[in-house]
Length: 469
Image (cartoon, rainbow, N blue to C red; front, side):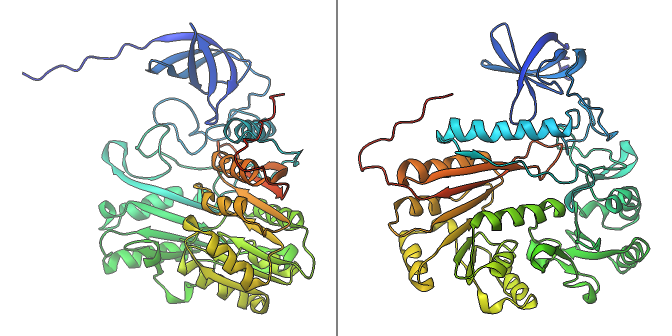
């Protein structure tokens, strides 16, 4: 006899919300216990359903707003919500966009203090970009779900591995949003629809669009004809990816190397493959690069090192303003394409690129680089979420250092950790820091910090942390 699963009885509570956490959830206290409530904003009184109970905290979902915040905004997307099936691509469409930026700035400053025990001397004005249709890159999951009508293409549902039943998306570029339903139709007619788990989308600065189909087995000749017909009808370049990202290739060879993003302030165009890492928000990227180059305070004699340089998003603009710049990056493929980009932009004479694992950077590496360049005046650091701990430790210990570091971060926690190493161990001063709203309506916090060398702490003496203010 089959055992009957005990049905969970819903539990509902009322709470007054104090603040937001780093995931954009409301934080309240109920009977002395912390509760994280999806969909609740500071200052609100809400009725919520308890989803999970742990000894130290509860998780809940708003079911009714009893007292609304003045900052509450009507979500634009019909797939945004809290119930079953809601898309997990956004977390904060219910919060007014300017308030989102203020929230992210607070997250940055709180994280710098609580993790790093550092505070910037100056807070940089936040960088804004477009609020909607900003996302030029996306990885869309594909699932064949018979009880939902067949093929689904989109982001995952909130707190779930299921795929949201998306028909439009106001954060994707308009042309990609309009292709979600036609894309479902295309994949539904392919013989390999069960062996096609994702589609990666990339849109160039001129609107040129590529779709990379991750295929676990080769498509048939008829499949390829269907894909190419879809590409012709919707002005999309069709790519296939049978294995890792480096295996991605266009079905039509003439579509190789046609995507690009531009940085008009510096007269630079950066070509990229649709699987290469590029910033998703092209408009904000232009502003970000301009600010970073200005904060480096370059002149025609400056010698610069750009760590985690990727395709040269910062390296090539820096080369327009400096005497010499070397870009260092872990991927051989990205380094090769960065060299090609320098050549295409007429910057080969002022740039060098090198492949090196920066997570194992050592004092020997730093000394060799310093000697090779005849000194380094400025550094730009733009690491992945893991941060740049090895490099920070070296710069904290080194006797010969640049006059300024500009650190671009996609993770406040690792930025705070690295700034703590530089400041408390190396005496570096956190001159300024601020946020960039690269991903509106999400909890992602992108930021930039400026550091300059100061007196090193005496060995064996712990620096006294500043008092909280």
